[in-house]
Length: 94
Image (cartoon, rainbow, N blue to C red):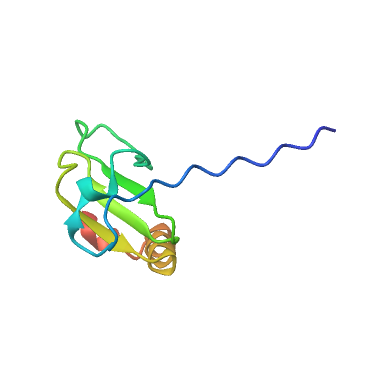
């Protein structure tokens, strides 16, 4: 049985600014390293995320790549994703 090789971690983008803060212009984080974790039939209106060098996660709206980036800690993003999977955010859909 052949063991699967571990996936290489994605390169972390180099940020053009020294200070990363919530609401900063997403363009200051650069254009490389943004990923769409999922995409549906919504006409391209997607959330994009980037893992930063310090482990935090930046999130931006794909239709406004120069708009604000929201910055979350890994623990905050984990709590959100686990809560959404458990149905705790279902109220947002009704």
